[in-house]
Length: 296
Image (cartoon, rainbow, N blue to C red):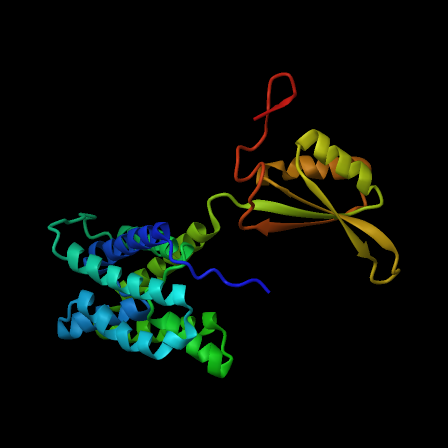
């Protein structure tokens, strides 16, 4: 069993700081400026601001400190440091942005406000999560419920967000809540996009009696690495080879053509690959030149 890497990296801290700055920017100049609510701890700080005029920069720390104290045992050394750091950076940038005399004039268009909040906040949170950061809050509560009640974190986070959004109706109307839901959807999509990366590859699983011919063509014509996996038919219990190859989305047609040319009855399954590292993906994808040869 490999030991988990708990080292603290300066680059991680830099990116978490940038993520916090972007998220706080969206919260101040889009959510607060246009009376849009939010879920989680951020949503609670907006409720406290609307009802009791408490600065979110301060309430973020006040709410998170007891949660971090309660949940510190469930966080590793790295997670604990990154959570405390993320909480402090978020509070700092909330304090800074609220004192910057900047107005983003969207002429009262709530749709543009919701899209802007989702885009900026989602990018910030995506960076934050991508480099191991968190701002504490409901993440810690969800971990506690998962540990003692066996409730999946995603379900707990969803329930908490729904509760916070419902409570937010005490200071916003139904119209603003509807645009808040649009913001929440865009926010979640941008977070996923940032975490998964802009490049989504496709994994192709092929089961065919002509596996060697298909493998040769994929390697020769597409210059993609291919893995042959030993498989066994569930009904016949006969051994066979299964091909696995990762390609760019635009190369799926060529793979299908190669398969069809050798075996029109081959079983083919295509799956999304959120991250593909290695030659052809983390480096420049091979392109065909004018003479038909591949160049890099």
